[in-house]
Amino acid sequence: MFGAAACAAAQTGPAPALRWGGDAEGGAPFVEADPADPSKVRGFDVEVAETIARGLGREPRFVQVAFSSIDASVARGDFDIGLSGVEDTPARRAMLAATMPYFEFREVLAVRQADAGNYRGLSDLLGRRVGTLGGTIAYDILLAGRERHGYLPVSYDDDVHPYSDLAAGRLDAVLLDHIIAARSLKRVPGLVVEPDPVATGHYIGVLAKENTRLRDRVNEVLAAAMRDGTLERIYRRWDIWDASQAAFFQASLSTLSRNPADAGSLAVSSSRWASAIRYVPSLLRAALITLLLSCAAMALAVLLGIGIAAGRIYGPGAARALLTGYVELVRGTPVLLQLFVLYYGLSSVVRLPAFAAALLGLGLNYAAYESEIYRGALEAVSRVQLEAARTLGFSEWLILRLVRGPQAFRLALAPMTNDFVALLKDSSLVSVITVVELTKQTSIFATNIGSWVLPGILCAAIYLAMSLPLSRLARRLERRWSATA
Image (tube, rainbow, N blue to C red; front, side):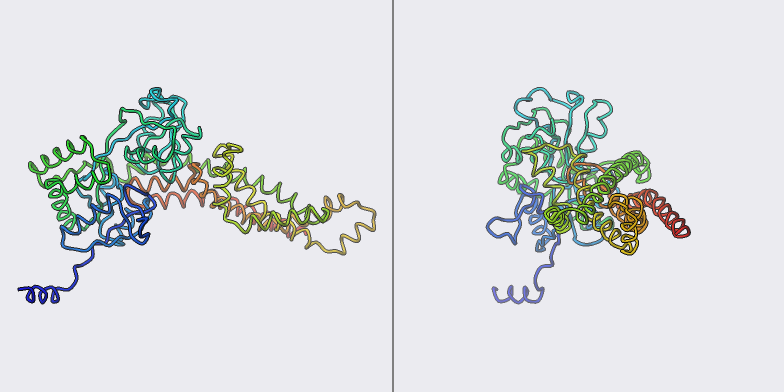
């Protein structure tokens, strides 16, 4: 008997893999690296994926993917199913094959202990700053209610910094899933969760649109895991089981018994084009922020760059050494790191507003590059002209203003224009410190409709509309000055 089973197993070979995508950066209790073996992952979504794989007779294989890219990655076939706290939305169901919901979460407000009871709902947050994770149901809720309730939504790229900023006083409240809030309150002291939930939502698995057969089999496994208590045991192990989950399971199974094809799906409320039309004003506002930030940062970079270049050419030895060290330090470290240091690292010394930190970070970074352009342009002016001006009795200031400066500016114009276009694009990095500029708003748009095609086209068109006129103006000035030279 044993020999026959072994022979059959040898003939069938190993079970095929069920590739599932998740983001280990999201952390517990969803998906996190196992402290005992960082090459493995653990979390309740990990165990749900293993339950699904066992029910299908397959072996689970984890694929790391950024949370914001789960939809796009599963659609292009990078893995079979995405499971990592993926929220159930009409747009997601329109673009992908979504499983039945397997967990119900509550959107809750976290506040400082001193404010407990003051902000029990969104209507109590007039004039306050409310943080959340961009591209989520919570973010949509905040956007939908900001005009009516008068608060300021603040978008983050992760679910860690909103709570640390809340404790530091940069925010007045954070709206996110109750299990994220519970985890964060253990890590950040001095915070509490208001008892009344703002809304409820559900986590689902997502598959490629055409993969409905596998989706239906996954639904069968999830329904069986609800009935036999497997999911309850998983949730209890991760301390996320409560009475609301029991009621949710009962309602889901009751719905399935009446209509197995329903599987807890949501109706699609709007088309992708309708969503695009609604997002256009937000994209234009974000584009204005991008343009204002880029222009202001470039002006700061030009002023500082001129000063640094002049100091390195005309200054004493100590000043030249100090300025050279600054240029090398800034050019040798990532601008992303510099933004983090300015906004988060220095918060105990000076608490800069997000826009001010973004402006200062980009301005200081590009000042180093601009200074090298100006220094090279100044040193490119013929020494014969400089000696002739000195022979005529011109001071160094007059030589700089009348002889060296104008010629250097003409030489520096083209690389200055290139730097401004580069700065316009690098402004996308400031989303890490909560500034919602054009690229961040586009990312939120793409996440909400489940596709990058239309948002990407709109974003590229707006960037081109901002950068092309500047490039054409610079070329026209170059031609005019070349003709008069």
